Each structure stands twice: as structure tokens, then as C-alpha cells.
Image (cartoon, rainbow, N blue to C red; front, side, top):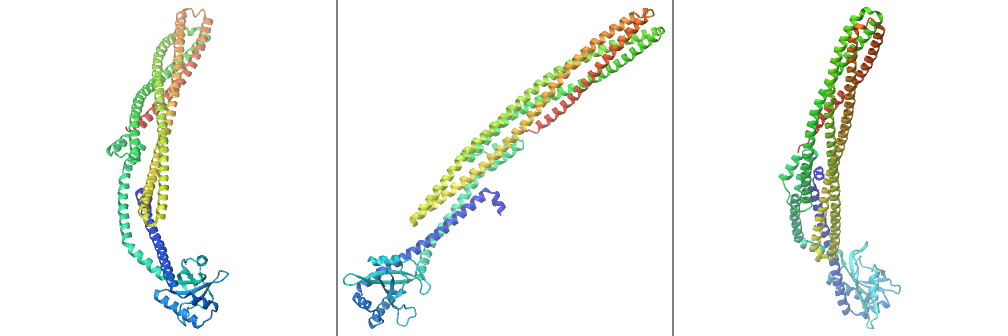
Length: 585
């Protein structure tokens, strides 16, 4: 039960509204009880004072003056006491007595109008609990009454006092009348029972109003389900589903929820358009980049195999040159073998030269493709930065909406304060302000409902802001990855430039080797006479071949690096394509 109330805004609003209505009803009953009791007490006090005033005009003040000269239980005392007892019985009072106020202002009970032998009767000159305010009023010649007096000996009662004056107008005492408090309670209960039908009607109207409020709140908050479902689809990256949900159940209201729906709808449309364009461009670029990387990888693999072949050939050349040098130094009889070796060197040099030219063409083609790929990666980086800026702008709009909600929240708080002031003023007005109290309570409830709705919308905006921050973070990571791709493609392009230069140098060296081999072949007939010169030339050929081998080894390492870079580009491009396919627009 409590879990359902915590999860349901409507249930919480209804519980608060019900509690407020019950509180107002209980408060009205308490106020009615207090006001009725006060009114009954006032009425009884006024009634007692009127009866006492009328009775004072008829009693013989002279007899009381004579008694006060000698306050003893004389025949006069019992006569006056009997008269007061008859008066008490006739008006149904609890006590009727005569009080004298001494020079110190202390009220003393002189005659208690109770029958002879009554244990509740007070003796002469007994101090009484007459309030000080009543003493002052009597001394001033005015009628007086007291609040509810709780006496442990004589019980709870309400007193009324009327001054008694002699023929000269001098104050000689006061006539007091005490009424039992059970009379007040009985009258108060009767008045409340008479008001019970009215309170039943008020309760029925309150329940009907509560039902109307529940229906209105449920109907007003129903669009929040649409907004929440759309936001959830956006959070999952399914922008098309979010757009379908928002357009499938349109919200026509112009209140805060309608405004939030319109903002969500606009955000969905703008985000769908922009992300769709971005995804389309990035998808096309990634497809092209994927195809180019695959081609580049294949070309790099071909160049790697060719370079390995060239390296092997250069090794053979180096071995042959070494053998030629040793043969020239050992014996002139090996000239025929040297001529054959020179012929092989010439043929191999021609083959190597042709292979080097083909490899150089492949490297140039790969360099052009790598330049196009670098430019496309830079375009992707610019699109990523633009998307990240749009996410930051969306966060700014969310902050502005939160500022407007703060103003609405302040208006709701001011409305609740005004409703509270109106309830206080209506309570002061008593019976005449009862209807206005109900209206003020309803206004306060509506203000509290508005404040709760504003808090819910604020929570939703915070959730939207969190989603926008997540988009911004993802786009930042994507921008970093794209930047890394740009740097890798630039490095690969530079490596291809170096490889092209190396291939170009190899081709030139091979041409030199071919020329040298032709010269050796043409001069092989004179080798017998110039063995020393041939040995020197063979040594030079060996050294040049060693240098060429070193260059081809370096070239082979560079090509391996280019090949590994092409594999990394191919894998990264494939991952980027899979990431793009997850965004549905």
C-alpha cells in the first residue's frame, strides 16, 4: 500500500487532499464545539445577571444592611437565607448567595441560599472564589460574570454577580448565582446535534469534490505517460519509436504539461532530423572508409609480398657478388662462371627493376586513397563536433525551462500562503466565514497540487538533462575516436610517402646495378688481363648490393607497419559501422 502511494503521484495528492479535508472538518467541529460552549456560557451568564438584577430590585436592601451590622445566625439570617433558597429553587440554579467585599477587596460569603442542614451550605464569612475581575466590576457598580470555575469542594460551575446597594446608593455587597456546568455541556451537545445534518451535507460535498479532484488530476497527468515513454525510447537510442509514441498520443492542453509535451515533441523532431543527417553522412563515410581500408589492406599485403620477394632477390644478388669477388681473387679460371654470374645478375636486376616500378605504382595509389580517407575523417570529426554543440545547446534549453519552473513553484507557494491567510481570516469571521474557509482550503489544495506537478516536471527535466549529458559524453568519446583515426590515417599517409621514396631509390639502385652488370658482361673478355681491376669492381658491386639489401630491409619494415596500420583502420571502421547501426532514426 505504502509502496503504491510512493510510486503514484495521484495517490499522494488524493491522500493529502483527504487528510486536509478531514483536518478542516475536525477543525470546524472543534471550533464549533468551543464557540457553542462559549456562546452557551455567555447566554447563561447574561440570563443569570438579568434574573439577579431583576431580583435585586425587589429585595429589601435595608434588611441585608441590618444583618451586616451583626452577622450572626439570627432569625433575620434564617429569613434571608430562606428567601434566597426559594429564589434558587425557582430559577433552577445550583447556588444563590449574598457576598460582602471587605475593605481589603476580599469577597466573603455571608448568606448561602441553601436549605437548613444542607452539608453544601457555606458558613458566614467564608472566603469565596469570586474572580478579581468580577470584584472590580461589582465595586464599580457593574454586573459581572466568570469563566468556568472548577472548585474541588463545590464542583464546576459558572457564576454571575449583581451589585446590591442600599437606599442611599452605597454598595453593601453582591448577589451571586452559580449554574452547574452540566447545563452548559447539555446545551452545547444539543446545538451540535442540531448542526449534524449540516456537517453531513458538508462531508458529502467534500467527498464529491474529492472525486472531482481525483478525476481532474488523473486526466491532467495522463499525458505524462506519453512523455515518459517517449523519453525512454530516446534514452534507448530509438528516436523513430520516440517520435511514433509522441505523435500517436498528442496532448492538446496548453498548461505546463502541454508545454512540456510540445518541448519534448520539438526536441524529438529536431534531434531526429539532425541525428538522421549525421548518421546518414557518417554511415556513407564509414562505408566508403571501410571499402577504402579493405582495398588499402589488400594493396599493403601485395606490396608486402613484393617487398619480401625483392628482399630475397637482393639477398641472392649479395650472395652472387660475394661469390664473384672470391672467384676473381682465387683464380682467373673462374672467369666463365663469373660471366654467367654477371648475366644472372643482369637478368635479376631487370626483373627487380620491373618489380620495384610496379611496387612504386601501388604505393602511389595507396597514398592517394589514404589522402582521401584523411579528408573524410576530418569531415567526420567536424560533424561530431557540431552534434556535441547541439547537445550542449539542448542542456541550455533544459536549464531555461528549470528557471521557468522555479518561477511557477514560487507562484504556487505564494498561492498557498494567500490561502492560509484567507483561512485564518475566515476562522476569525466564525460562522459567516465558513464557506470562505472551504474555498480557501480548495485554493490551497490546488496550489499544493500545482507545486507537486511542478516538482514532477522538474524531475523529468533533470532526467532529460542527464540523457543530454550522456549524449554529449558519447559524442565527445566518438570525437576522440575520430580524431585518433585522423592521426592514424595521417601517420599511414606519411609512411606511404616514405615507402614511395624508398621504392624510388631502390629502382634507381637497381638501374645502376643493371648498368654495372652490362659493363661487366661487356668487359668479361678482358677479365683475364685485368683480374685485379675486376676484383675491385666485384668488391664495389658487393658493397652496393649490401647497401641495397639494407635499404630493402628498411623498406620491408616500413611496409609491414603500413600493413598493420591498414588492419587497425579496417577493424576501427567496422566497429564504427556497428555503432552507427545501433542508432535508429
